[in-house]
Image (cartoon, rainbow, N blue to C red; front, side):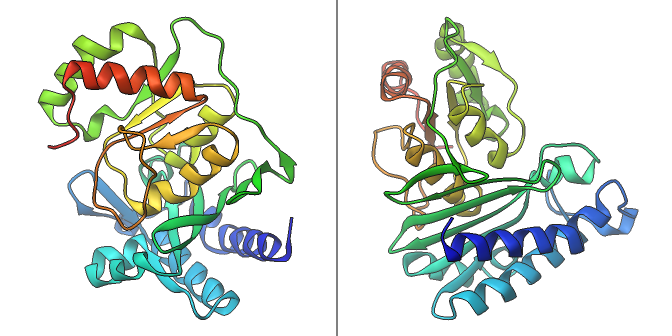
Length: 270
């Protein structure tokens, strides 16, 4: 790992140790609120984001800070996504965390001009760091990783159907799902991307593609040799409001699912 990788990892570990793990399975009722329907936030999310924001600003003062909770409170924070910026998901998998379950993780991405350049995904329960740098490969705890298919026939697909409109779910269930072995999505993009890269799942289908959920994982999967892209094959941009994305362990798997979706008339609009 280079110096920046080590610094970000130490910040993630320190944040997890200081404000996240002490509240895991130890949250008071008033420390979990619904900021929107079916979208909880905890005191640990907010304290984690504050600590990560301060630390990342110190590492690279010229970069904007785009945090999930800050953007919820002030949407103008999203204006930083089209330039050099840090993107923070203080706890990805908050529903799991708040219910005392896993998986969950802290995620940070470094992006510039709309494209992710660096990725750090830290699972504090396993003390596992997945990280990647654009053009330099993907690594797990410092060891390089290469995406692998499961070998299962039909291929294993995890779809985030909870964010689909009813018409999309109906079409998915009738025209797409029968061609795949369905896997339960972990409700945590920080876990879903590694599951595809490590050969546990072959494919993931996303509807909602917010930058803090996908910037780090998408780069990690691509740098591992998999494919993470929009349904038409175009690159994921952190400054885009488009919906829909496929993560795949190989180009062939990506192409097959994208073709099935297109032939079925599946649309990401909802």
